[in-house]
Length: 89
Image (cartoon, rainbow, N blue to C red; front, side, top):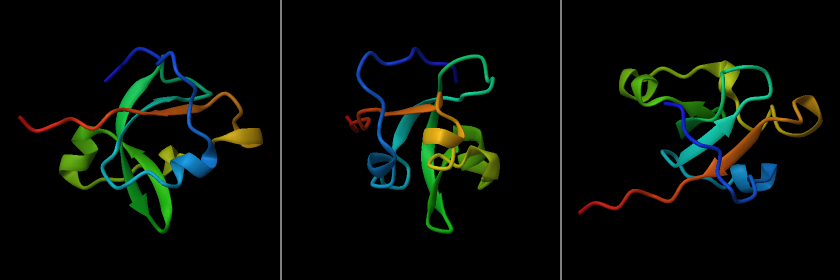
């Protein structure tokens, strides 16, 4: 799902590595994907990945969406923001 880019600073690599399983994030990828998209965080092999809701339901992990690999000098324009948890009402 396309989302607006937040107005607060993106997370650092260290902050991304502390996100819990299922945390909601917005990611702007350095190369393509037409803007910010909302994802869930999924941990696999000790690394955080971005996972769409559909992929989450299917149990699919796209290994191209490895969050910490693309931050910094490898892909300097990829940015990740945490979203506030959705509260159950």
